[in-house]
Image 1 (cartoon, rainbow, N blue to C red):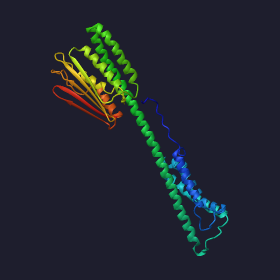
Image 2: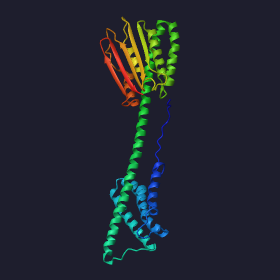
Image 3: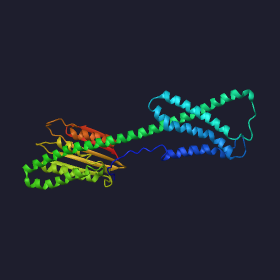
Image 4: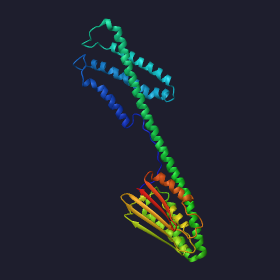
Length: 354
């Protein structure tokens, strides 16, 4: 059984939960590579050779997180692309120069590369060009991950806001339905008091139970189908007392004992059936059928039509408009509503996937 509660949106920071584990794992693999692969400089991993191996990854980390935490938020999200570009040019140049200086501070490798003085300038240009491209890729990766993370957070907020809006709309629809139903019930009670005060006294106790159910259970998110059927039976029984030539039947098929669904889902159809089958000269009826199987529910409401219709028998009224909207919110793409009208009857067929 579900209960209503206040839904709060919690958006995790970049380093909380699975996101933090991914960051740590990625950098852990990058900084752990020297332990599995020896470079050309030495066959044995020493403290000095390891430091030479991690200087570049450390600079990658600097470029990545300066973009991730500062530049993307400050410039890219605020649509200052040129500031973002210039900031990255300065950041990448600083990282390359810093790496170069740190490499110079460390002892030279044990197996230096052959000296090629005739290609020194070309090698320097190539070194800066290749590294600049690598740092640009790192910055681009940071932007992509940040954008994806930002999109995910915005999408999560959008879904939460949509859910809150739908819940608020459902509550508004319920608040519109309740006075409408109460108005009809009080009219029925008024007719009974004038017609038969003793009978009215007995029926008013049943009306009290019905109103208690409506007030208390309609505030719940879901109720038992058996409770809904009992409520409909009391409603139709009250109508039968008020009208001499009125009959009703409620049939049930399948196991309804453990079926939960939103409250007051069927009463607008039944109200409409009662409203449009009043016939002072001839008998009238309402037939309700419930069939449950394989997490599906079929509801059928058939009412007779008076031979002389005072008004067109059609789906209308505040209650039925509300129920259509409620179905869209509660059972999106999981319901079918069909309405048929003949010369003698009016039928509503509702199929729900629970």
